[in-house]
Length: 149
Image (tube, helix red, strand yellow):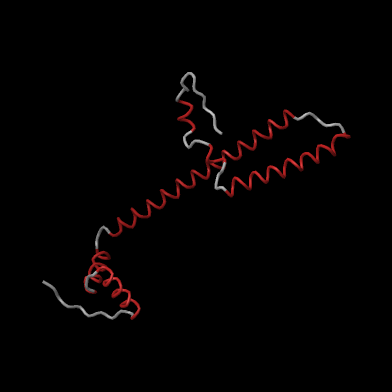
């Protein structure tokens, strides 16, 4: 059994209801009925909570990836500095100018290389496997090498 209910809605909303009804090829009454049923449904809150939980899970995974990437960047930087400081002998005063010039040239090449990699969409992160502990658990088979290039 059906009963009639007259409601007053803003003109813009009635237009949107009409557009949706036309796209779905149903009556405006069917669109309004579905909207009201959704609002009155007891599982509406559960659906909203599930959607929110999915979004939070996605954000959590994104934050974990960012944390991992930052950890890799910091560790890489620290290892490079430790290696560089351990390998570089002190320079005599007369060699300082030549070393500075060479350093400037190398840095310019580094920036060029970095710019090329970034413009190609490549990053150091792409060279690192997502699951490093899993790699450590699997011993390499004899005759095969694991290299990242």
